[in-house]
Image (cartoon, rainbow, N blue to C red; front, side, top):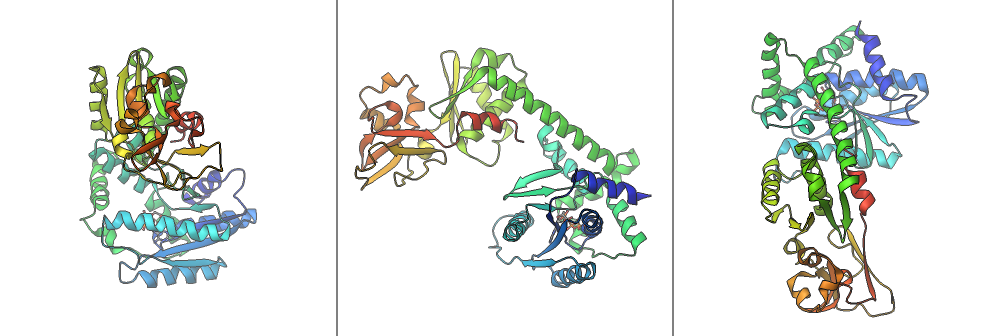
Length: 419
Ligand SMILES: Nc1ncnc2c1ncn2[C@@H]1O[C@H](COP(=O)(O)OP(=O)(O)OP(=O)(O)O)[C@@H](O)[C@H]1O
C-alpha cells in the first residue's frame, strides 16, 4: 500500500511541522500532481497555508492548457494557484538548462513576494537515478554522484524534495487509486535529450537488477560520504590553513600527509573562496595545479595563483585577472574587498581601485616590510589616481586607507562545510 509510505515521506521532510505557509511547484506531470495532493493532505493536518505555482515556458504547444488544468485542479482543492510565464530566452545557451534556471528564479521571486520561504518540488528516485547515470558518464566523484540533495538553499528559498526515494511508478499508482489524472510531457520521449537517454538506459539496466530505488540509495550514501569528507576537510583546514591578506596559506608538510581527496577538496574550496566562482574548477585543472606545486612550481587556475613560499603554499588572486577592474573607492572590489579611508573628508574625486600589480609595486619602495610574498601583494587592492599609486593598504604605504575582506577567514572555514 503506497499511501502510508508516501504520506510518511512528506511529513518526514517537515518535522516537527511544516512552516506557516509553503508552496508546491506543479508542472502538471504525474510526480508533481501526486506531490500536490500529498502536500494538500499534510498542510490540512497542520493548518499550514499551501500555495501552488506553475511556470509556463511557452516552449511547447499545450503548455498553456496544462497550466490551466493545474489551475482548475487547484481551484477544486481550494489551493491558491499562480501561473508564471517565461518568455525571456535569448536563444543563447542550453535551452533546457536556461529554462530550469529561469523556472527556479521566477518561482523564487513569486514566493518572496508572498513571504513564502519554502517550495516543494517533485523530484523522484527515477530523477535521482537518471542524474547518477548522467554523472557517471561524466566520470563524477563522490560529489557528483550524490546527485540531488533533499534540500537546497537557492535564490533565498529552501527547495525541498521529499519524494527522492519514491518511484515514478509508485506515484502514478497513488494517482490512479485516487482517480487523479496528469499530463504527459511529449519531450519526455525525445531521445535527443541526455536525460531521456539515461531513462532508457535505466530501463535496460533492470535486467541486471539495477533499478531507480537502488541508484537513489547509492546517491544517498554518496551524500553521507560527502558530508564526512567535508568534515574531515574542515578539521584538516583548522590544523593547517590560515587566511592572510586575502590569500589562503597552507602548511605544506601537514597538507602532504592528508589523503589526496582531502588535499584536493581543500585546494578547491580555497580557489572558490578566492575567485568567488559558483562552480568548482575542473578536476584536470586541479590535478595540474597539484602536480605543479609538488614540483615547486607556481600555477594558475580560475583567476587564482598557487605558489610555494618556503614551507607554505599560498593561494591568492592572480593580479592579472583583476588588474583592469575600475570602480569607485566605496565599491566592493573583486567581490570581496572593501576599502575605507580613515579621513572621510578627503576628496575621492578621480580615484579608482585596482590591483597593486607590478606597476604599483614599482611605486612602493618598501613593500618588503609588509612581509607578504610579492605575488600576493600584487593581487591586493590599491587606490589609484590615473597611473599614480595613492595608497596600497596591505603594503602599508598610506595609513589613511584600510582594506578589509567582506568574506573573512571564518567564512572560508564555514564554506568548507556548507555543501
Ligand atoms: N513548469 C513547471 N512549473 C512548476 N514546477 C515545475 C515545472 N517543471 C518542473 N517543475 C517542478 O520540478 C520538479 C522536477 O522537474 P522535472 O523537470 O523533473 O519534472 P517534470 O518531468 O517536468 O514533471 P513532473 O515531475 O511533475 O512529472 C517537478 O516535479 C515540479 O515540482
